[in-house]
Length: 303
Image (tube, rainbow, N blue to C red; front, side, top):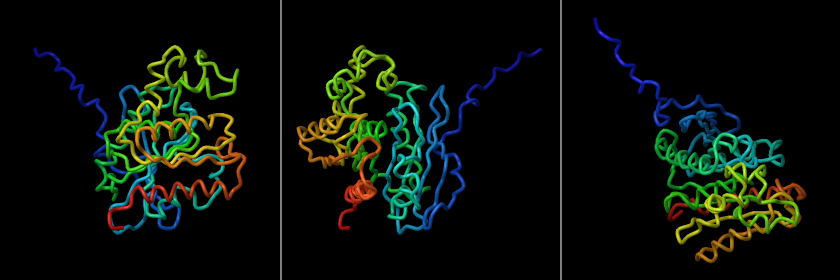
């Protein structure tokens, strides 16, 4: 009589996202191919992480990449949402970038209710690795990648750009992003922020109040990681931001200058968070500056 053979538990492992079939393409705008919901990582104990890819329909060769990281206070948000000022335009902002010759990648990442820092930047690192692995399948030049995020997504874009190996990222764009978590108590109006409060969005990201987790707060701050190999930065922030003080973007620009870089810091007069308070023309200027910056960062030699 023979015993039951042990179960081959390796069969329970998920398939490698590097070899999974890509989603069937949609065509949301002229000249644009959209692959919605491609699995790029399966973190243990978590849901599969997916990304939308907005691709030029035709291109003479591998195209540069813009990775857009959504906001939502690290707590919520949709991967393809650039905020209320961009929800009604046709074609939308990502289709426009694809029409301009970029691949746009909009990833999910683990939110603070799922896992604390550094899970979010680990997810973006996995995304960049996946893009390089699938570059030939997708027609990408992943060596020309710009990270771009708004609000909490801008924080994650900057943190990733500054902690990935040098040369991985060609540039980084932040819109009204927190960059120095320990300094938020100083930068916000007196009495409006308590660094000992475990219920703030920052505390939920860190797994505890910033004042009680000072090392985690420093590690989660882009300014901590600025060094000589930082990529070019475009930093946009409204002067009247009531959620993330404009001083946070100034701090990042100062840290980059002190490390020998020349960041492009643009303070948008009258702008509140999500570009509330500025004209449609002003919002379009922020978008156009971002597109122009991405073009400069990803321009090939001789182009």
